[in-house]
Image 1: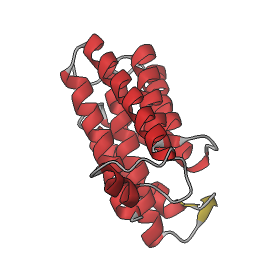
Image 2: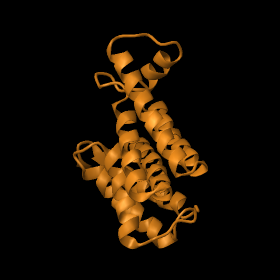
Image 3: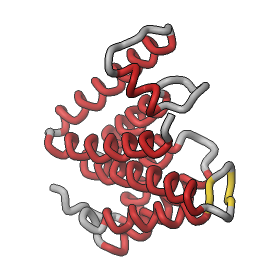
Image 4: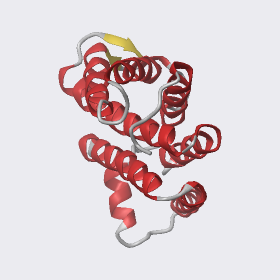
Amino acid sequence: MSETFRQVVHLLMGLLGAAVILRLDDQGALVFVSVVLVATFLLCDAFTRGYDLPVLSGVMDEAERRGKVPLKGGIAYAIGALFCLAVFGREYTAVGLVTLGLLDSVSTIAGLRFGRYILRGGKSLEGTLTGAVAAALALTFLVPWWAAVVVAGVAGVVEAYSPLDDNVTIQVAVCMTLALLGVGTGLS
């Protein structure tokens, strides 16, 4: 498994998911995320049962951590997106996916390369700060700059300290923060 490849896939899934959700109407976005959830679950089941799927098995060997439930992160990603769609709508969900993709990927790569000060569970201060800055910069294209800073900061803390799956918790924290701030997006 290559952690860099894994994180690039993670980043692309967050950005691609956000782009597709924004291109669809509300019903279409709900159907898309539901299909992703079901497909990811079925693939997880197939890999857990030992099936070898052409092309996908090779990608899984490179993108999944050894000894973990295959595609657990993908299932959590889809569950988080489905919840956010149902509760907060497409625009907030897209912001949550962009934040998740960037923050989680950049913080992991930066933490592995430059991390010295461990916060919790192997998460480093350097990785968390780098991921939060990258997310904040990207979010300035979607929300006001001050909201981007707040959202990225909250997401960084959640990513570093939450004991639960960050593929769900980051998305929900981002959407809740945007709602509490009463911030609209520049996406409609």
